[in-house]
Length: 375
Image (tube, rainbow, N blue to C red):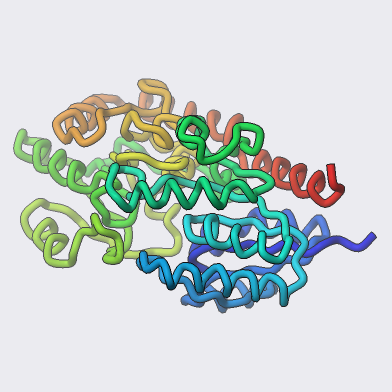
């Protein structure tokens, strides 16, 4: 029997290219025909260059106009019907909600992935209430909904946004432990580098990172550098603008690296990776940092604390607390090279045992095969 057609649907081609290539290769190796559906961006052609079949869908990721979103449901259903798809994998908010409704209209089963709650769930405003209603309505039609940490799954189930029986857990998007290998760089090299890797939005804890850096520098920690790696993301309501970034670089001894494709090469230059995020699905940055055997400082919140065992492969700090973050940074600076190396090795072992991407692939393949067999 010939293999079926699977569509991967995400809100950017960039997301597919950076986070889903391993899964795509695993599905292709199993003989499935793959269709990639996302808005066109600089990474769409890169996906096609790798031999994948790409189809464009226009999504206004910033928009909240209900009439536009209803039109999006129609666009999804029309495209899905045209492409003769057997199973659809949805990621990110609008594909999860409106793609699921579009698939329901044409009778195609879907597997959704909630990779994080996003800004809309970090408050209890009108937009959050609407999002919850939409999740509750659309997720009735999902065959399976994967979550990346147990806290997000419990929240959705407790608020009756999805039935427990529909859900399962994945260890994020997994990490290719062959590609992400520890370097031989001296973790205690001077200057000691604290590296923040994320989009430049407040929800990632960038303000707390800057304030903690100022605190350390004000107390004489002169052999330390603070690097920012990530894009401005102005469509987000908590975005940092260029003016604010320029001010930090000018007055706070912050080194801004902008955007790079090879994040691992920059991580390998750092002594410690810092992500004081307010909440994550399961932080890809932290997974990669641990795979590279880097000590980590992050917040004691869902999606971050899942990767770090406090005092074992890093330190946890209180969310939205720059003073506590600076205290954890000082604790990290107090460790000698052997202690830092031991912390990194324990993080690497945690990734190998709990977060290797092969675990993710096996779970997806199992659900897809069960779905296609009608079990």
